[in-house]
Structure formats: C-alpha cells, structure tokens
Length: 468
Ligand code: ARG
Image (cartoon, rainbow, N blue to C red; front, side, top):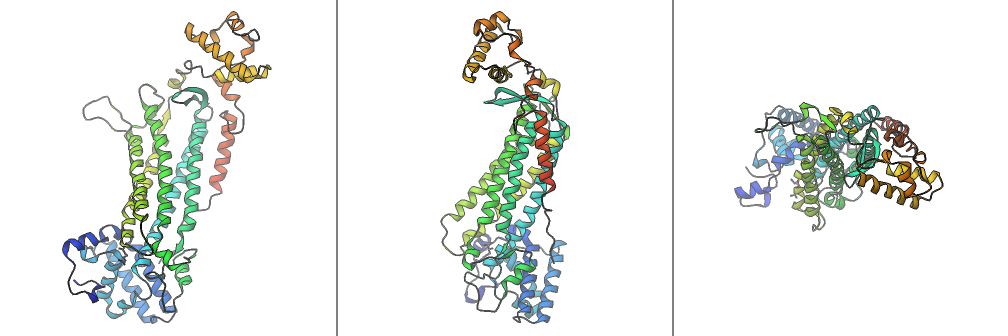
C-alpha cells in the first residue's frame, strides 16, 4: 500500500524500514485525541471557508465512525498505517472519498502529533492530580487517627527524638502537596494549542488558530510555530514532576519496608497488599512497597531518555522526536498505578503502638528535652548539651536510663542539677511540649491537619469538561 506521502517516491519502503519508522504500535493510544483534533481542525476550516460545510460534515461523520470502530476493535492497525495520524486519515479517505483528502489542509503531522500528545497528557495529568488529592485525603485521615500516637523520630537511622505518627504523615503530606502544585503549574504551560503551526512556519491559508485552540479547550494557541513543533518541555516537565513524586513515594515505601521488618515490627500491612514466598511458608513480604521503590528507577530512566533525545536536536522537527512517546506513556502508567497502590496500602496499614513503645527506653530519646529544660533553669544551651552528654555516658556505663540516675550521680556531673531539675521527661510529656510552629506536639499536628484540609477543600476541581 502506497503511503499518503508517496508522491515523489519511485520505490516502496523496505519492510525493515517500515517497521523501524512506524510509531503506530505505541501512538494508537492517542486515537481519540487525534480524532478530536481533526474534528476541531475541520470545523475551523469550514468556518474560514477553506472547506465547505458539506465536506466538513462528511469528514466529521467519517471520523466519528472510525473512532467507534477503533473502540469496538473493528479496526486493527498494522505497520502500513505508520502512525495514528496516517492510520486515521487513510481510513477516512477510503471510507468517504474525496472530502477526506481535504482534512490535512493547513496542518502537518508535526503539529498534529503535538496536539495529540498535549491533549492526551492533559487528560492524564488531570487523573494524576485527582489521585494525588486522594492520597492526600488518606494521609489526612491517618494523620488524624494517629495524631497523638507516639513513635521514634530517626536521624541517620538512629533514635533521635520522640514524635507522633501523625507528624510523619503530615511530613509526607507536604511533599505530595508540592507534587500537586508542581503538576498544576506544569499544566498551565501544557495547556496551549500547537495545532495550525503546520510543518514549521505556519500557512498561507486563512486559518484561525485561536478558534481550534478554543474548540479543543486550550487556554490559547502557542505563540511561535517553529517552537511549537520542536518543543517537548511540557513532557519533560511532566517527567520531572513524576520523578520527584516517585522519589517521595519511594522514600516512604523504603520506610514501610523497614517498619514491616521483624526488627522494627512497627506496622502491619493488610494481607491483601502483601505477597508470600514460594518456598518459605511463614513469609509475608511488603512487595508493593518494594515495587514502588523499584518503579521509581524506571521513571527516572524515562526522564533521562527524553532529556537525552532532545539535547542535540536542531530546530525544527526531527524524527528523533517520535521517541518522545513511549517513555512518557510509561511514566504516566507507572506514576498513576503507583499512586493508587500507595494510597490503598497506607489506608490498609495499622501501626502496632505496643511494639513501637517497646523501643522507647533505648537511645535516650529525651536527651534534647532535658537539655532544653536546663536552658529554662538558666544554663546556657552549650553547657546543657555537654551535661546531658555526660549523663548519657554514665547511663551507658551503668546500663540504665536517665530516670535511674541518682541525685549524687547528677551532682557529680554538674552541681546545678538534681533529679528535680530534670522535669517531666516521659516520652509523652516531651512530645506534648514541642509546641513550636511546625513541631510534633499533637496540638501542632492537629493545626497542620486543619491547614491541610482547608488547602485540599480550596483546590479547583480537576476535570476536563469539553469534548466531541
Ligand atoms: N509519528 C511522528 C511523530 O510522532 C509524526 C510526525 C512525523 N513527521 C514527519 N515529518 N516525519 O513524531
């Protein structure tokens, strides 16, 4: 079958060239966007008097029929279709005849493939934003539930200071909040319409790019035709946002793996989100968390792939750009699935507060609190730090906790201190007292939850309310 662009060619493409050249096997997932773009384009062509209204109606009817057939599996694309744009257009011409040959007036595949990707990505960004918001709502619910539950805060994976579990949830809330903001921001630049830029330099025909942009629900047409067909920044921005967000998921997934270990035993992940071992009958593995961590690597790879494709390409369109899709689609699928799995996994995880408590006696969690208490007794912080350091040493030698130190031992460290001057150093009292803005006290965590809830409530609705 001769290609639609075959006029100047004397020979057919070699079979292996056809295969190498084709993008139909991966770009057909944008068939709906391709057809909607064509409907908007031909509507504008008719309004501008470039095609007749009868031709427009025939074309739109033909396109809708093709769309139904693709959806029903009646059309199966093959390598001769080359890409989704040719696949649809050649069928349209076969179905409706001469009118179909007018569809490609005043556009090129160079702008067409970009309008398709932008529309497809727009839909997926909306879906991902909704999944991020759902994740945030699960986090807020859990943070509330565990706002007073005590646990251990680590630095260098060493016991550092006591905190609440709700506080950890709210730390992750902030990360996903920024992920949402990043994607909302990227969406603004994505939502511009390149259609009508044509091959690289616009057209001599009296088109109306503002009209197609409006019909397709974009904010406005892109400004410069040559940039429009060469730009892949919006995909790179998506891939960057995806990489950062996957990094957040992966960090938390890592913590889940630790917390789920026998050594920690901090959490119990629901059976439905774990897997077993084919040989060790006792095993219940946190595979979802591990897979999330692993899948982060592939999204980073997707970002690197497109950055590398783009780095040496001159203006304007180069065929290299066809390589912009598979990594983008892979990152979309991976991020989307990861968000869903992760939200459900944390929803289905309970913290084992009795187990966590068993570790409170190790690691001198209240050391900083004692030093701060000394500060209120007019001991400069550097001296207080050193005094508590010496207390730790004595405790370590004796194998005991701060509570067990005698007045005598304390006096011999520093004459200004005694058992009374330590204050209430229970883990709960230490946490309750961390009332500084952004701190871990339950009161402060509740405040953070309220701010978070308000922020979520005030977000715009993420939805696409247009389409043909
Ligand atoms: N399948 C191509 C892509 O996705 C469409 C653009 C082809 N344009 C061209 N001049 N070869 O990039």
